[in-house]
Image (cartoon, rainbow, N blue to C red):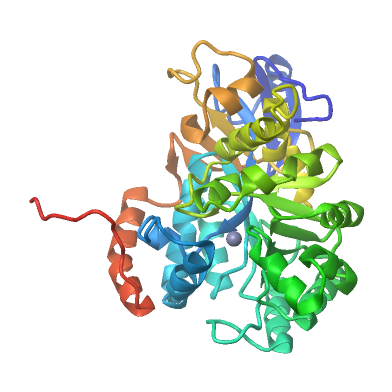
Length: 444
Ligand SMILES: [Zn+2]
């Protein structure tokens, strides 16, 4: 994913410390680094680490696919996700984040951008650092009434400031300003958050317009559509990554482009929740006009935490919506998953390609399986021929964090057992019950 998109056949990556020192011919690199440890990926496909630009590392991992599939977006948020978050202990947060990190790495995702619905950011960051995934961390930022972790704007901003202090930009885990967004934050909080991000050189993310409801409530409250209102408040800009942006009109699209605001596009969740991306989503148009777009997987249980799968879906939606198979194909989809995604999350100086000077986030896809044999064009193959399922080994900042499909920092069977053990207590604290739709019969 360098500027000329070179595909090296039989190539090598030289890693020194946490960075890529050189990418090139294997014989030349072996000669240049005679004493280096060698990870032999002969016959494999090696790619840059993939980027998930909108992830809820807590709140759904321990309740994955337990809610009913028959819920509106509003019910899903307020009757399920919010109370479920409210039941989380600090231990649950750390356990959830470890589950997410392992799942992400297993599918070749090496960077996750936390959407910010986290009560114990230090515990989530501890899990990320332990498992070895790169990403951002944030905490609850909203001042709506009657919801957990809500606080008056000044207090909510103090919490955001504390995360930035604890996790400086550029680290393996860096602090972001994270608002819940939607129509759940006051103008004071949104403007203050943008000022904070700008003054600290930090990034900021918030949810907006996955459905039509944000537009309806902004129009009722302010007389303006959401993105136009945010532009008036001075919230938009290069520091901002909006989650979703599915329902944007012409003026909003123009404002996003003019301000260089980025969008995290999570196609699986829009389809799962029936949010109208096929009829209303304009991410493809935004991309063609030079907009900044990354891909995301949102909370677990809304489709796979697999950016290659999301990338294929993004291409498919764009082509089908335009009834045009000649635009936005595998190459563009793979760019969103890597270098274009890195640019959209403000990290293109560090990640998104295998180039000298970048962080050594490297993914090895095994190809001795039916998905990859015989081997076709590598970009086509990554998007349309397979997905994250053949990822075997992953390096993040030069550290091998996945080996033969297993995390190196912990025992995944033990992690699964801990998740099973934690779930019942969490449901009890949250006052929720799993809601299977078909009868469950004890058949032991
Ligand atoms: Zn979200």
